[in-house]
Image (tube, rainbow, N blue to C red; front, side, top):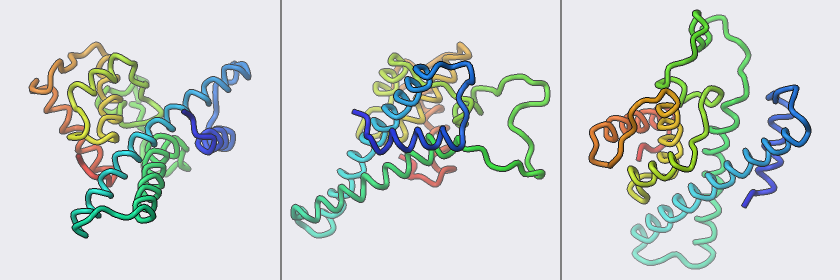
Length: 197
């Protein structure tokens, strides 16, 4: 279920800061914006549910009783606001180009070669959306609640980048490759200043 607020934010960011291919029809543009808003709304809802559950658990263990109705509503509202901020920052606002800094070099190698998968999955403008098969694999390898919604979102981009380059994907959680890739996701969460879990 797409949030009207998220749909409005996506439309505004693309209208003011990002460009869509000029040869797209109005229908293609709207379809892309709708799909983007739906994906972000789903990611925010998943993360909000998870953060809300954590907040209620922490409050309960701290106070030795369950929160009353109003306190619980407050905790869940705070969790939703945090989830919205985290997902929008990581998945949308990160796309807005920053003014060029003469000190930094562009990520694209001089040779014009595409970025390696190890770099592509962490850069919004270069990565691919995971398909259903990848999302199912992520859920099997790194299930909730041991792994956060944000961990699984990032892991999906990582596996999608490997699949694009026809590299091996882990098939079960005990696979050493699954452990190695999970460590890359943890590191990326830490780099973003997010809880590594």
